[in-house]
Image (cartoon, rainbow, N blue to C red):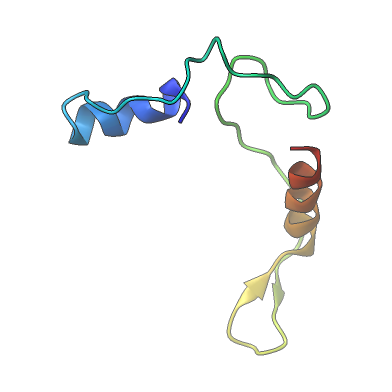
Length: 75
């Protein structure tokens, strides 16, 4: 886990004992995906409309699904 992501759970729930597999410095950067530099996570705004699913019991957002698909492809 990235050290910035593990900081909160490690210090809040495990008295700072959680360990990460590798350091932030040792992580390889994927240059095909425009990931913000030195950020372990980020939010991506999408502007799609929610639709009621064919079952009528849940919602879906095709624009968000396409955005996730593209991110996973590059990662």
